[in-house]
Amino acid sequence: MPVKITKKFSFESAHYLPLFPEGHKCKRLHGHSFKLEVNLIGEINEQGVVLDFGDIKKIVSPFVNKLDHYCINEIGLAEQDPLLSNPTSENLAKWFYLQLKPLLPLLENIRIQETCTSSCTYSPN
Ligand SMILES: [Zn+2]
Image (cartoon, rainbow, N blue to C red; front, top):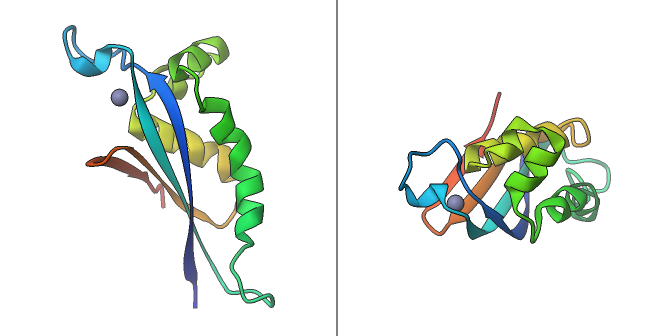
């Protein structure tokens, strides 16, 4: 029977949403304390776990550190990455999913929370 597990991360980043209309508050440079949830699903192995949480942390942390205390748009523009150049929660969740899925085959979805009341879950399946 498949079991779901979740590993949570957080990072502080600046961003702006360039495709929002002039005057919209999200078009201005601002910051969030982003919360990231990495959700996996799989069978319990002979160790009694789906995957070692420490192994998940080792795999995910470089991607979190890449964004932490940076302006995400600047990374996106430097790397010509359309998701990071327009870093909505939806695009950030998709970016994390696309980065992590090859490294974490049990990855089911990514949840990004940018405020206490606003979050997005990217779940392509
Ligand atoms: Zn924002």
